Length: 92
Image (cartoon, rainbow, N blue to C red; front, side, top):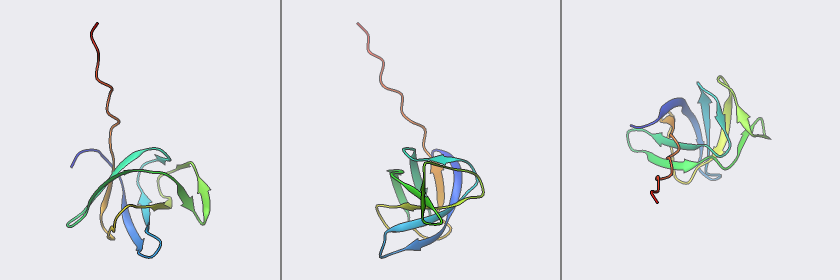
């Protein structure tokens, strides 16, 4: 698994396609994350986050945040912060 561990999935709302994760490290909207587990491997960008039904831009360690996910995830899945890729250097 590549990336820095930042949290764990604690709940998944199937109808809404929303996961709740407990954070160990800060997370911001726009960050690229990977959710990984026994049967899960999902990479996506965080489009929005909510805490207690209020939209936020940045969450802190200890927060339980809700994010929309592209596919099913499961409680216990690990959430990793992926490093942003550096643009390829061009030589002229």
